[in-house]
Length: 182
Image (cartoon, rainbow, N blue to C red; front, side, top):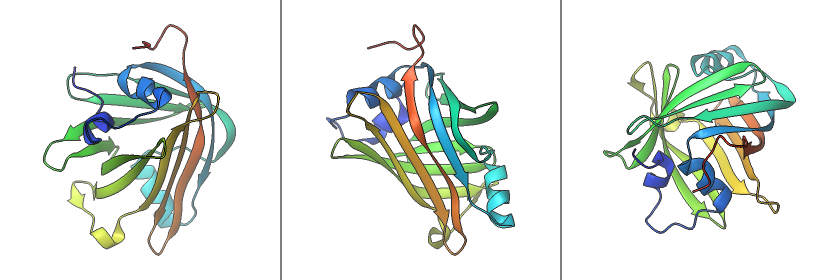
């Protein structure tokens, strides 16, 4: 089993908070709550459909199932019945995380800053065609451990000239007996 792609992309010795480390090293099931805000306009709707992103929702249950198959980490995110699946791998050519979401492929670069994992977008392809750098979504994605030790996430993306794509934020905890503790 290869290490989690996000941990592979971080510099050696990065100080990853324990709640993030648990989620990124232990395949298993996680559950929590989440709110989702989608952008508007037909281009935004099309982009979200290509990535199979969830609909708008406020304070809904979310379940995440993380598996590992060799060097691929499949993630299935169940937003109250709407499932968004992705495949994560470490791209040795770019030293980035490669995430396949439907017809979209993202290249992501994490960094740890003040106890938070901040995730930057480095590339995007749609139907296998690379997106020009000037048209890359503006990503504001942060994972952190709150004061109670719980894993929290805030994912937000916007398209240049078009506005907000999607924003979803919430928290997760391991389902009892489903995730290893190290």
